[in-house]
Image 1 (cartoon, one colour):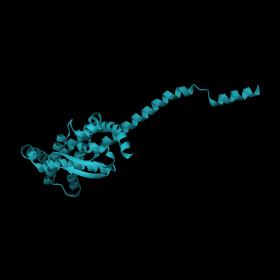
Image 2 (cartoon, helix red, strand yellow):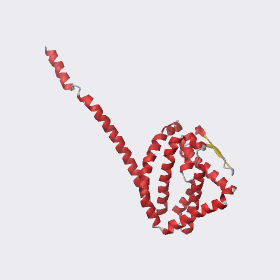
Image 3 (cartoon, helix red, strand yellow):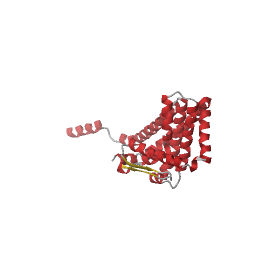
Amino acid sequence: MRNAIIDILKWPVAFFSLVFAWFATAQLPAQVIALLNQQTVWIPLVIGVLSYFFMWRFWLRTNRTVAWAAVLEHELTHVIASLVTFNGVHRLQADSCGSGHIAVSNNGNWIILAAPYVFPTALLIPGMLLATAHPSWAYYCFFGLALGFHIQSTCAETHFAQTDLKKIGWPAVMLLLPAYHIIFALCVIGVLIGNQNGLLQAWKRAGDTLSWTASSAIHSNRKQVSPSLSTKEPLSHLVEKHRLKGME
């Protein structure tokens, strides 16, 4: 029953995500400028990202341990989504050949399927370290390496032959994935600069837009119904007519 309700909410969530991403995109330039003003953050971050891409190009893409880590990170993201949506996980399998699988109770739902393609699990450890330690150049380089790993693995996993995405349905995927990549980009920048105002403003404006749309639709429906009600004879007139008939 729980997963059935979640599956019903797929399209409402997809459309809200699209609206949210629209306002998140509007907030991105200001957040990027704020990040560029912090040279001690973005310079080591970019060095870390480019270093990972360089190592991937000339060494890591043939490394079986890295291949296994990418598959494990993918499957662990499925597990996180399963637990968040209160579904049990019975088995997890990951190998260095690019194959992985988890067994979920109750057949799962679309959130479990979509999670690895939108949620940056590889950034959880760097994010937690940022909250508990004083950041340094070495830290931001490490964050950049993790970000490079996330970008590369997500790009490699997202393709038209991907079974998870086929199960979700490509129309919904085309709405959800771009929207959530924009939203998480805004979120990650907010974490790095220590300011999530951009994300909060986008959330507020998306909510206000949907509230205004719903209110307008209800108001329009009432205006269509009210003329038909006004043509009816008032109840007091009917009572008066009945009284006069009784006096005749």
